[in-house]
Length: 251
View 1: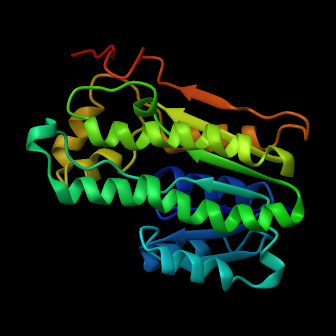
View 2: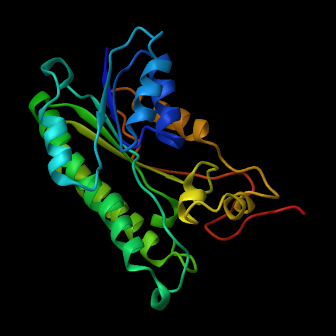
View 3: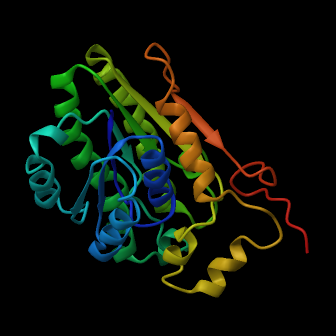
């Protein structure tokens, strides 16, 4: 039975992936900042015949990340899959009007946090000479759109890091995949607009977006390919979306 570590498991894509992986007999290590949600998720999955470990830490905090991974029970240190899902967008503004606190949180979560967890988990994978790292990127890592400057920069960084990881870990038989969604209706926009639910809901009006389950199913497909097959990069969009800014919305 394989073990998967999923970051940002308390909502959205991470939550959906945890449920789907449990249904498909993966042992799980679930991380997030909201301890109550981690406990709730673990309790919801207890009917599955899998081991579930929860790690409550802020991925922006290097010490917390390192201590959490180092403190894992030995039987869970053979991590087969790392899903780097934790990430966020904050604000939409021109660069000259940007909120520095938003910039810091996006960079610390989307780039530095991903690096911290990847370093520790990849070291365990190297010992086992196998593993699979799945980075949840974004169409924002392929295109820059108006007012998305810093968020797009962080996702471009994820794209570059994915390519670098693939080269660095090639000799250790570790697969590396980037999954880059378009518009997914999760808490993403609510977080971006600092809790303004009405503004967030308007983002998805007039068309059918992707949902968290769609991305979870894609992640499961990617990590269940034969040993000799790696999906390097996968862009997934709603049918109504052509690129970052072109969406067929109906009144």
